[in-house]
Image (tube, rainbow over all chains, first blue to last red):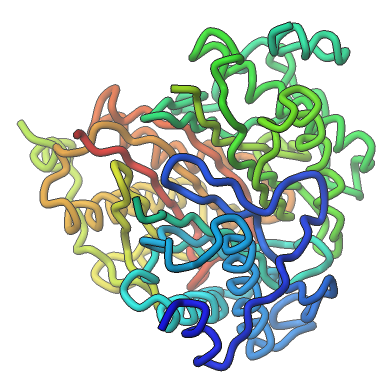
Length: 153
Length: 153
Length: 153
């Protein structure tokens, strides 16, 4: 079973690779690394979730938004390299959570992203991560996720 | 025409490499990558733009500030490697925008940085990017930009 | 004198490697680089400092918190690679400071991290750095530090 099949077996679907919101590219392959642009929870060009945690979006929905961000990261990587089985390791995630200034459970939101990656990739999905609260995000997205990935040689 | 000439032809000027605001170095070359420190819009040691978007600085000025951040990134890279033609690819930008907590057009500000890089480097200037809104930045700068660059071998 | 001895001579102590706050790993070694997860000032599983600078924690204490974040980064790296002398260079720090929206002295707080690294590693400790103010951090930590390190070959 390859990674794309694993994603479907888990009940998820790779998104259509979102177009960048502006003048940049969704992913750069450089040496053995891939750097993704920050992904917000766009599905077919529409933001599926928006708001500031926990004021205008619930933690539950923000977790689902973080999952979509990961699927978007994977779909732009797949568009670049052809198949996700070429990934050796998910190296690093940065998860920006649009949150109120007294909110401190960013790790719970970011787990939406992290746990999905481990479900999909197993040990190769275990990554270093920073999760921080930010005052605002593009399009009023609740979460933005960027990823560094290492490819098999 | 080399990259430095291209910058001038576009009507821009490389800044004097800004000194770090504190105990760090402006750029580290490691393997084939260069990592810059986060650059704020300092020109000759003075912050050219300050404020929080859109409350105390306009979007137009914040875009100009983002351009200066890029010129500062390039000038510290040039100070390290001698000439900008050694750059193979602008790999990754992170753009932190000092913004109010209901502002959501960070991509428009970050485009000041991204579009200038593509004008200067062409395809080699197309990069992955994250843009986020933050509650405050050093010196009350409106924008801070950091860059990862890959060198030709 | 090795790096671990140097840390003790400076009057510091490597922390017990903190467990991740959630579903990720504290450090990933990939190629010649190590990426740490974002570290908050946990000591033996307890947050030693919390609050928002300068509202509910002083600059002095936030600087001490930044030092603990660095020690935590080093302790998770040591747990991965065995001894810190294998580090060739501290490449990049990102320092997120939990700050009010009119605070602009993040570099002073981040210097707690940067200066300790230079004391410990000398020239090899000189790194590129971004310091930004964020609206909130996990557990209401005042500072979160992540690190990219290059290993000797």
